[in-house]
Amino acid sequence: MPGINTSGAPNTRDYVLGRGIVRLASLTAAGLPDADGFRDLGNAPEFSITVSAEDVRHQSSRSQLKFTDKRCTVSQEVGVTFILDEMNFGNLADYFSGETGSYTNPHDTAFVGHDTAIIAAVLKVGNWYQIKDDTGARVYDLGAAGAVYSFEQDPAGTPAVLAADDYEIDEQMGLVRFKSGGTTSLADGDVIGFELTTGATVGQDLDEVSALTQADVTGALLFIQTNACDQGNKSEYLFHKVSLSSDGDLPLIGDEIQQASFTGVAEVNSAVTETSQVLTVRTYDQQS
Image 1 (tube, one colour):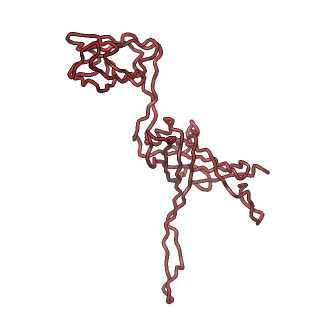
Image 2: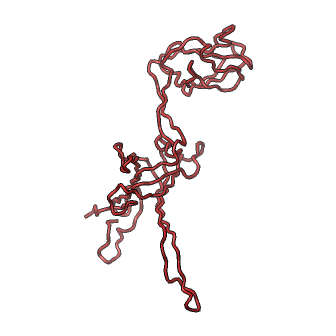
Image 3: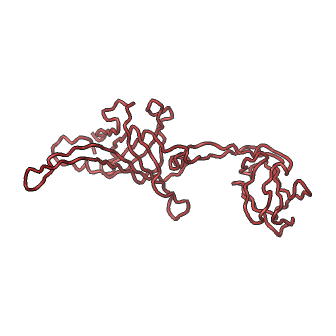
């Protein structure tokens, strides 16, 4: 697709087999892309634009059959839909209308005294529990080099440090399940405490997404289309301001690659100087 056809004749180069790259930029208070630039959203197997219009039609009654003699367009809207394959936390935050952040894992700070971190005040044998420190913060990655920890039955009464066969632990995600029939006789209703005698040598913090912290995601959307029918000739679709939201399910279990669907509406961005403050499409003949 080399642009405007000035030959007056059909051109097979105008056939389009689309591929492309989707990028998104946050907008400043002034309405322009911020200093972070455009973030690549990864592989997008589908990207579509829908133009809709609302009109009022007048019909003449001057003859036997009514006919439309005037069509007045009262509104226009440009919509976008696309699918993403790559579920990094930036894309996940956009899907959940949220924001990314970092969780400081407290497993590099030791604390002693099992009674200061109670994992289960009233134990239910066989169930899983979150491991928390003496401040109530979640602890992850307990398999990290240097971390030394233990669990204790009845820490404020007659303490008994639990043996390895008394529990099952997911060190990476900071979860523990207490079992019956081990070295220590555990029963429903027991109090179980946790102690981190030595902190990890290197703290491993976690990326996190806080969902539903904003009504939608707004930004400038840049789509670079590559035409597989024209030796990779490229076109640029720049939506100056788009309001995005998730569209459909996010399968967490399945036999296909996980995908997230988005829908959006292009809005007028009065901060830009382009002729259209909604959408600008540009190309040049890269084969000439």
